[in-house]
Length: 429
Image (cartoon, rainbow, N blue to C red):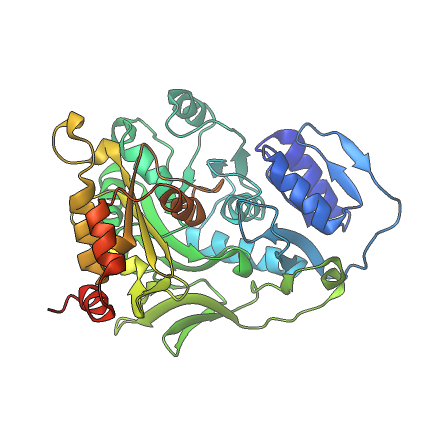
């Protein structure tokens, strides 16, 4: 689904007529092919509006509450889909509209893909209040976008961490945007210092900065950080959305509310199922502070083992970034991969990335041997269509790279005694 009027009208008309809609990236034929093969849709509508009717009767039984199907992967035609109900869509749109205080006079630009749950939530929350949508495929780093935004009287912008990285390299802070009321950020963690930067910029420029937290399984949003708390609590995800509840169970964040999905679908027969999920286990590690604000401390799936030692990839990445390196970290058992953006390397432009220094810093942060670290220099970090980091692509770059390790380092890591290998992993003599 592209950010075009014909796509939007088709989507809304299909919902209005009671059809269950599966959204896909119209510019990704591989994704469309994968979804088609897995789900055998009855009707297809191309990005240009062309309609293909495969059959007059449904190929699979559909539950009457089923309204929308979204992929959890964002990059491939994953057979695993999130099943969302009419009530889910309505509830989350109202929740978002309430805490953002969306007005009928507001207008949001489509800075994110509409097949992505965050981009779709911008559409739903504005339409539920009778507000406007300015449809565009222009990038926020395109000067034409800002001319468009001014002409359309855009009052709100939405972005993922990658969006804000791009904006910081542009002239955004100097732009004249008299109607801008608020900017929202979700789709991944934004470093606390960047949260402070954007909150301060908003305060100086007259608009609010909202940090938000969510997942496709919760239709979109689960929590938000009130703008007046962003400067003092930049590492927090804030409080639950109206009508929702967060709690920490055995160190993990659990969410409940009217926007929790019906459940997953992994085969066509699952489309006939009703509700199979009432409480969402987010998979995020978290805690609640004495002030009642929630914080995500890591991802339970962001842990790998190297020589039996459990490594928190979020901690490794955070320490490298705190040292001034623009990095992304991925891993699997026995291997950590670090992509480093060459343009942000400190020192002379011609010097490039000091792979040895990055490997040593990574090994120290993760308490792993040098031979388990691969460093890859990139011009831009791999991202998914929605702007999130593509961790599988990061890992693949390292697995096919050879790691920039010297033969002696690799031999030392792989050919030494078991005792020495564990000593290296634990930084013990």
